[in-house]
Image (cartoon, rainbow, N blue to C red):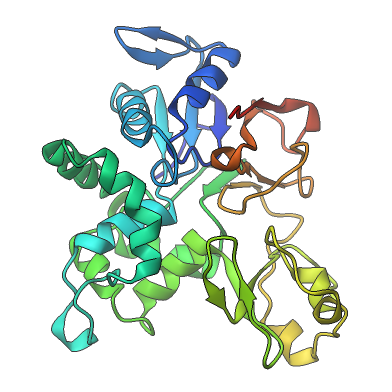
Length: 319
């Protein structure tokens, strides 16, 4: 889906059910409610996905975002959590060896639990919202800037432009994602979850939620990395000994790079902390862990072609 390059936009990171915090941020950005819908006379919002899961007011957040999009006051792209919800309910092709596109494992059940509970008394609404998720594009772009939940990879997005209408998944593509080695699964993983690398042999990491993994999330903008520590991009980091390990030439050659001469890129997904700021002059992550009592962050984009640190706006999430 192509954006209007002449418009002014406010890009907002992962909401994760923090509806009241979102309302505070919109108010701070100069939006107000008219007939129950938040709007601005001159600007539009672009939500970076992950509206659902984890937070205290998921249903309210979804209605707020949905109503803004339907009224033409916002765009919203798909996050990995919206995709997880679709995959949870979508039967997988028998030859995939799975029952559902997102198998009903403890991990995915835990991630979706708050959403299930908050919509338990509203099954028709939840079905309508899942239908709406199918209308959320995987990416947005214009000449000046690009928007994707986790990672922009032109080698993946170019064929998606040919395959998907307006960049939105259809049922066939969703079912194809059950095949972990197929294009659909790899494309969704790259755009919605980013890049990763296996940990050094024998090493595993356990997240704060109790899930153990043998890989770590990596930067996709580091131009001359030398060690594991140079490319790690996740809240929990790596053990010091692992971070000092040198990368082999083979490992370096497999790293993906979003170059410094590419258009502005906005992503969410990565649970950052501290004071919001650009990662690089053409790259910003707007996920600052709102649902974990961090910040809900926006970037006020006008006609600039280099990111301005003064244009980040945020509200702190209170307990």
